[in-house]
Image (cartoon, rainbow, N blue to C red):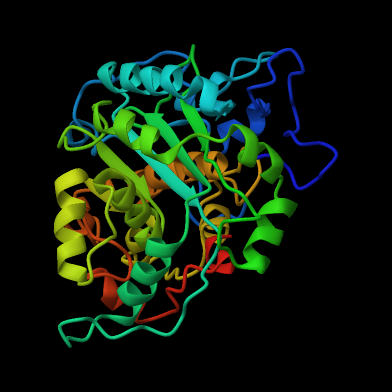
Length: 366
C-alpha cells in the first residue's frame, strides 16, 4: 500500500527503474528481532526471506508445528532489496500475467494466501427485513447489503509456504487495482478520503483498473480456489470474503448467513481469520485492529496501511507470528484446528466478536 503523500505515490525505497514495484528495505537488526517477544510493540508485517529453505515448501503445516520460526527465516540479504518486501501493482494490461505468476507460486508450494480487500466503506447501516420474514444477524445483514451494492477497489494477495517463507527470487505479493469511478460508483466519502490519503490513485483506477468479471474468471481457473490444498489467511474478513464470493458467483451474496458460510467453505475450504485467532489467545487478550495486533506481535509493516497489498502481506506475517508464538506448542491453550474455518463475528467467532466491536470501519483495521 503506497504512502499517504499525494506527491510521492510510492513507498520508501521506491525503485524508479521498476515502477510497477514498491520495494522496501529492512535492516538486519530489525529483521532478526521479528520473532522474539510475543508481547513487544512494533508495527505491521514480517518479510519471510529465507537465506536457506531448510524446510521444503511443499510439506504440510503440521510437520512444522513443533519447530517455531527463527530469525533465519526472515533475514534479508545485506545491501539488496529483499524480494519478499516487494508489492507488485497489477493493472488491467497485466492482470493475466500476474494471475499466471500466482498460479505458479501455488504450484511451487507457496499455498498460504494472505488476503485483504479495500472497498468504498459502509453506506447502509439499518438492516432490511428478509423476504421470507426471517431475521438475520446484524453483522451479516450489514455486510450483505453493502457488498451487494458496492464495488471492490483493491484485492491484495500474498503467498507464503507452510512455515511462512516467501520465494527469495520473485515477487510474492500482488495488489490488484479494479475499475472504480467516483462519478458513477457509490461510496462513503470518509472512506474514500482515507483511501486517498493512503495513496490510492482514483484517477488511475478509473482509466486502467482491472475488470472484476475478468479477474473472477482468472481466479476460478488459477488453482487458488475450490482447493483444500490452499490455505487463506485474513483479518476480520467478513467483508473481504463476501466480496470474493460475490465476484466468484457473479451473484448477490445470500440473504442468510448459513448460506454464505456454506458457499465460503466451498470456494475456500481452508482458511484462518487472524483476528479470531488472536481473540482466542488468553495471553494476548486482544480485540483491536490489524495495526495494533502487528504492533503487539512486533511485526513491522511494509508499505502503506489501507492498501490491500500491504495489508495482505502483514496479515500473512501476523498469522505466522501467531502460529509460532501461540499455536505451535503441544501445550497451546487453543489448538490450530479449533480456530480453522471460523470468521471473526460469525458462528463460533461471534462469541469473540461479542466481546468487542466487529464493525469493519477502518479504525478497526488499523
